[in-house]
Length: 321
Image (cartoon, rainbow, N blue to C red; front, top):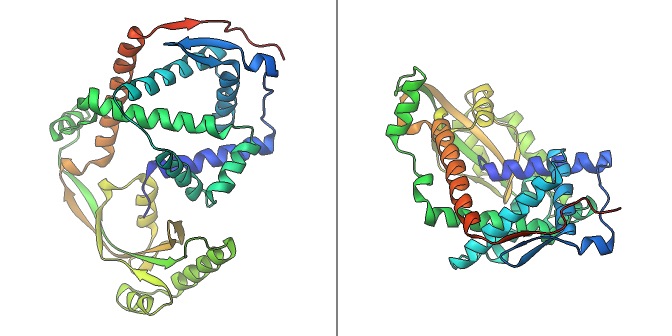
C-alpha cells in the first residue's frame, strides 16, 4: 500500500506537465545574450536570466501560474542560500539520491526514468536545473534537522492541546483494518506489455476472490505471486484516499490493482471493526502540527542565513525577447 506523499506529489507533477504540454503552455526563453545576463549574486554565486526563465516555466507547468519575476528571483536566491548552507555543514546529496527521487516521480507516473526525463525536456524543463531544485530541498531538510531539531518534534501533549482547542476528546473511535497485501511480481526491466498483462491477471483474480481464507491459499499457488504477512492498520494512520478505498471494499474482497515498485498490488480486506485509538495514533493531527512547525522553522532559519549573506541585485528587469 503506497501512502508516500512524495510519490503522490510526483504523480500530480507529471499530470500537470502532461496538461501543460497539451495546452501549449511553453513561454519563450530569453535570447542567448540575455540568458547569460546575471540578475543577482548570492555570496558571489550568480543567478542568470536563464535560471529565472526556467523557474518561471516550471511554475507554469507544475502549478499553472506565473508568479511575479521578482518573486522567482527571491526564490532562486533562497535556493542558493540553502545549497550554500548545506555545503558549509558538509552535507552532500549524492547524484544517486537525486536520481532516486526522480525515479520515484517516474515510477509513480508509470514511466521509466528515461521517459520521464524526456517528458520534462519536451515540456521545456532543463533536467539539470530541475535536479538542482531537488538537491537544494533535500540538503536543506538536513540543515534544518541539524540547526532546528525542534521543528521536527511533535509530542502527544501537543496533539492533546490541539484536540481540546477544537472541542475533541483525546481518545476517539477508529476503524481497525486487517489486511493482506498480494503482489503480482513484475521483473525489473519488463516491458509495458508485460506489466499490463500482470495487471489484467490481478484484476481477474480480484473478481474471482470471495474470501480471505480460500483466496489467499489460491494466491499462493499462482505464478510469481507474493502474499505478504498480515497487516493491521487504524483509520487514524491512513490518508483520506486509502481510508476511503478500504471503507468501500467489502470484507473478504480485494482493492483494485495498483502499480507498485516490483509489481502490481491488490489488498485483501479480511476484517474491519471499530476500536478506540489514543492520541498518539492521530496521524493527520501530527502531520498538521509537523507541517506548521517545519514551515515556521524553515522561515526563521532561512531569514537568519539571508541576514548573514551578501546579496547583490543586478539587472532584474524583464529581458527583451
